[in-house]
Amino acid sequence: LCSICGDRASGKHYGVYSCEGCKGFFKRTVRKDLTYACREDRQCLIDKRQRNRCQYCRYQKCLQMGMKREAVQEERQRNKEKGEMDMDATSGGQGDMPIDRVLEAEKRVECKDEPQVNSATAALGNICAATDKQLFQLVEWAKHIPHFTELPLDDQVVLLRA
Image 1: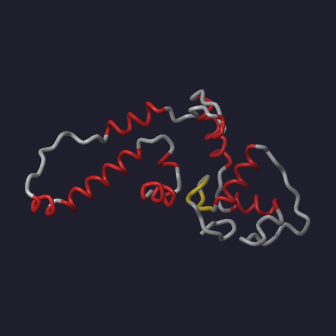
Image 2: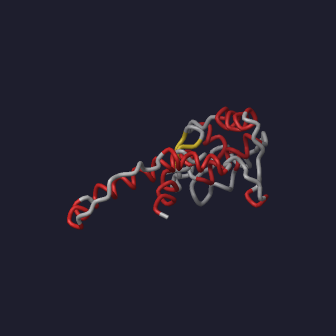
């Protein structure tokens, strides 16, 4: 569960298990250096239904639960140091995942030529081992795709099952 509002957490973001909503709220607040004011007594309830009512109290709860401002800054600076430009997904550019990186990942897990099994019985006996090997190779291949391991685990599983 999200440490801030109690919604379903999508992973650990900026040092705290949180939902996509609170992760995005915290990132926008830090990147745009926003400041908020509470209209009540700075003790507003922050839960799934009311998290958008008071930005001040929501941000304070993010900090109280351990979200780190520096984690957002480091992420932005890391991209600058690599010389990467933020590209919109619809821009048609290759962004930060050139095809050669995908091909390189595929080459790393390519199977070496293995002797063919001639017997149908032997092939059936090895089907579990072959399936395990294919699954392992799929996971290893995906780990070499840029940014795959940064996705929440649930999203990684969905993509691997597709």
